[in-house]
Image (cartoon, rainbow, N blue to C red; front, side, top):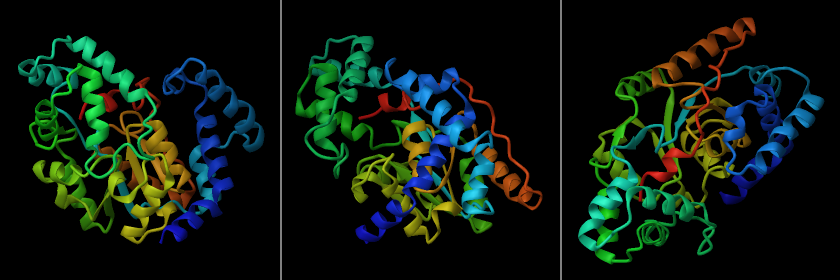
Length: 317
């Protein structure tokens, strides 16, 4: 199985590379695109490459037209959804929870200090394993908690860890999500959650009463692949029995969700920019397929300047 997934990913590598380069070039060197990169040094290089290589090789055709040339008719027979930041979000800021629970364990850092230390720790290379989230993810999160708060008390960590496995810690981004997903499934669209998460994801979805909305859950800790690795998206396709080009992924992180999905051959929309609700996802997919008969184009909403991928990496344990 691993060999077949690897062959699927390798066989169209050049096509997908051009696909991603062009998609970025078509959007142009916007300020939002530059902010999607974590360092000032990386931004100019990332901005210059698409302008020089993408437009030089591929001209000025937009993303959807190029996708039609690669895959033919656009169909969305499956919808993949990211978890944290797209399907659900934290109910309270992480630093606030770390501080509140940590007071009885002697945590003295302010919320601002905790947030600063959290961001620093999360940004460091994780050298203990190839993946951050292995099984229950405890070693990684123990490192994050102790680095953020200066407290290594095992009871403190356990209380935090268990808190983020309950519905108290999270709420759904879109209150209409359930209605939309049920309508999509009734129409024959297959649904999956595709997430970089540890093994608590299933209990979290059960606690939020949305686990039965999906035909499959693809969790990085369970499939040994983390976004943006295309393997995790190919696994979702395998579980749902669809081709990558027939799947649409929606997520809030440009690198992990958009580039990762497109590297696997899937379509991808950025949550909070291309779409802001699951009603928009449903409507946009329907309009795109209806316009195929006239070879039209769906016009994605302009990037609204959000910092892709930053906020929701800083909000859980």
